[in-house]
Image (tube, rainbow, N blue to C red; front, side):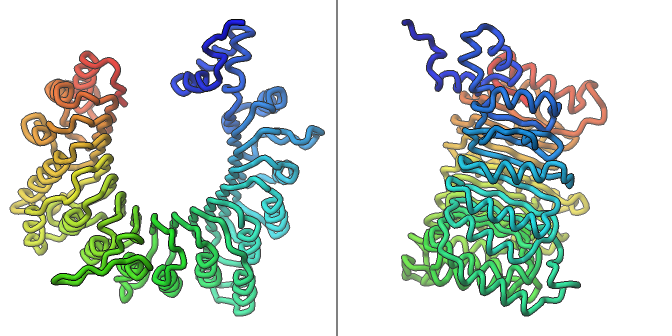
Length: 538
């Protein structure tokens, strides 16, 4: 019997990666043979959010054995109440379920999960989980022998004791994301902590067994929860490698976290994300202390010299993310260089108020091994003329790293300061960025978002990027001044031989008129596609 190419499932999967769901459906309809080849791939992943209820239910029952991944919500009947088929999806591996506040399907989802034993990934989002539902959920999670990844979001308050029970039920999980958005706990009333509730939850957390977590993301909804839960949870996670802390506003809890890091309680932790972590002005160095805490872990080497710096050459972080309201100052930059320079390969600094240019230049001058950089920075002066000396010094610095693979930069300036000496600083700061990026000979992906006028890129800024021969993806997000045209397209074809994707985003109130952003973009796109038809342009 002859073997056809699509008799090999891996080849079918490879083809399916490059065609749409519509095209995959057409493949199924070609013949009975093609039906047998492509049906398993077509039904492997199901998203019912935009589908008709009756069609979804009928089709899912017919092809239930092929289904591996489901994305659904409670307005669609993926889990009918009258079915006698158990298990309904015998090979399901991943379920992404969103409750939109309707109770019609909650009983069905509980019923289904109570009979399911094959799930290894579960993502649940609820607007409201009552105490009875919380007990049911913790029991269901405890009965999932193969569950290794749980992502749970509750948008309203729940019984505080549910949280320790949840951790106990997930002790064998490798990845846990818990986001609680409720403002108050039932026992706390109008924001006042209940000593009894605090003691009960804290005692329950102290009884928690060691967990197998490699990755933890957590956001709790009150000071009560943070103080009773977080420190003890980290003590139970000796295998933790990735930790994301979201929306913490309690300095006492943050100090506990710092102490845990200093004590080397999580010796394998290599990836840290602080998102929306805020505190009072008198504790403004708290983020710096989090970074420094790793310098006290076991395996740190003390290197002599003028400053007798401590470098965590074995225990330093490999990635650090400071997002939203997290402060990142010159002290933060120096702490990263002092304790994590040998190990840090990924840095993300994205804030609503951005990183000051001198701070950004300083951190880039002390991290030699960076591979991934994502940052939002202010070009020029951020406060009039007072910081111009620091900017002048920063413009003379050089990035210590030369092997970046991915760069995502948002480089902005404040229009009210774009005058006199500061206008020159903005232009020089932009040139500085292009010059330093041009030194990254292994760069594969670069995205730039800026409100700086980048016109005439071919004659100016692009000339600094001629050595980026490995660049595959280039993204440019600008305002009204779209700086690319036919000349720039020709330049990219000549100098970036591996380019396969270009992404552009701009504002265009004038339409397709001559020299409008849309007109220039169309000219650029046509020139690029004419010379390289295979390039994807978004």
